[in-house]
Image 1 (cartoon, rainbow, N blue to C red):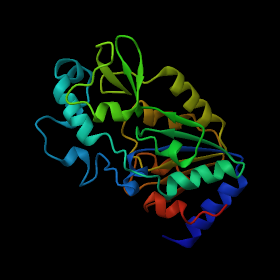
Image 2 (image 1 turned 90 degrees about the horizontal axis):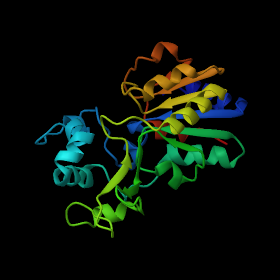
Image 3 (image 1 turned 180 degrees about the horizontal axis):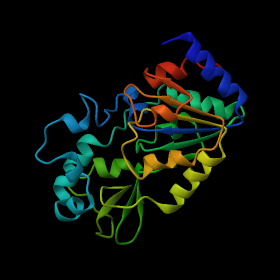
Length: 241
């Protein structure tokens, strides 16, 4: 990593009053949570069904027990801790910057680090609700269930995550869009920008600088003012407040 790129990112962070951070699975890999599309990612592992099938709404409805076996084994990582990227973004907010987090992750690590404005496009493993009475449950209720988790009323508990075949929450999308549109600096990190409609939100950016931090090339590289091909935690650990 060249010092000049870090120096430029540092300068833009210092100059910006409103920062939007758009992050994907690569933000949490340094916390020990596997991503999806890398060599060791979820999509390159062998299962009875493809991950997209396990994590679809129709599979949740028709194969509920198998859905939960996969979901509990692969999607809930309660031992994971925030890494340097999560922590630095929270520090920037604490230092007085307006920092909005738009995340495709469902792990809750940005909130655990201390960020207060987090828009979770795909929901969170930490929120689960009864489909019958709407009572809310923490992730532990899912993990501790013998098979399919049931509410005290007998209803089926569903994770508050966006499964394949389900739409994004319109309010979350609206807030995320406004955050990107109003920001001076947009930092995109740890995402291949291949999952839509979430990836399409970056087209609303009208600010000064767009920074892309990702190990592999993305379709937005040509739009970025600065591209850094390094682990995002390593990059953020070099930003001083």
